[in-house]
Length: 375
Image (cartoon, rainbow, N blue to C red; front, side):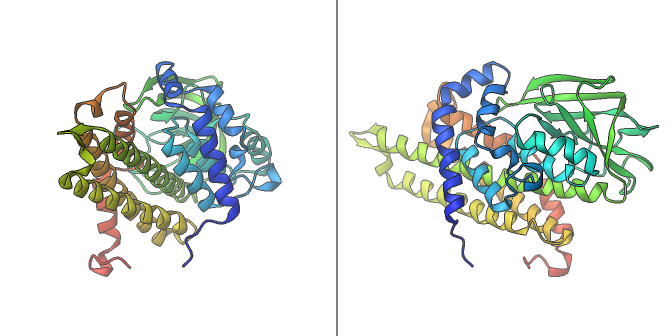
């Protein structure tokens, strides 16, 4: 199998990397963190590359590119520690909106492609523990009432895609539909806060808020699962980019820091630890490729593959983050040093779209017929 990127994908990577290096320096990122974790100016600059339409069909003004192209972009955003919710707004939202009526598609997709609308998935609920079927938000006469947590950039988003229950108990597999809710709709309120890595999230409260149906209960849960899998694939690519950059930062530090008159990077014990870090990075990279390539397959094999990828990502994130921080010594945990911010971001990534224990459970449930051997 050929894993080389084509010329267009290489150009895409270089364009995003140049933007990160020029317009998203560590100093600017720190200023964005102090400002609340989201910058509309930085977001507009990123979308100025045309990336808002990355997964939007050409018929709606987008580029109509695929999962591998998205992976390339996410790797570079990970390298730059970009906090703006690109995966949510430019990868997940277009997928879900493409299942809506022609009227909603014509209204929303061109705006996403043009960078005029920031639409995010508001899916997480208190006590759900990553279970997509745990939905207590209810629909009554076309209006939504409920509460969603950890909504990316929720207080500045223009609209939300909200799973809500039409029928059944809160944990039933059936009866879940997807709705589009405008932020300015009466009955919608948000409360913003910063996550550990400095990015912005919000609590979303819905009190008899008007909404437009995107997908009925016959396909709501399946689409929600696909959206989560796209998010995991994007997270895997972002994690690879972040770990790769942190590895480079650590290698530079080891080759600069001196003890006993020599660079500590010459010490055999530290070289062995760096080799182990590199191994974990490459394991995560291979599973990131695997995740992106599996997105187009049937739900059963796709869900298993994405849980396997997220499980490996969690293991790699933890190992790379901890080892690189320890190799730096005390400076590795100071807020003034860029390495500590990579460690924070890697830690938050490990909890998004399911932690290691959740996906270990998912993998074990789906591998009973193979006796624990990957198929």
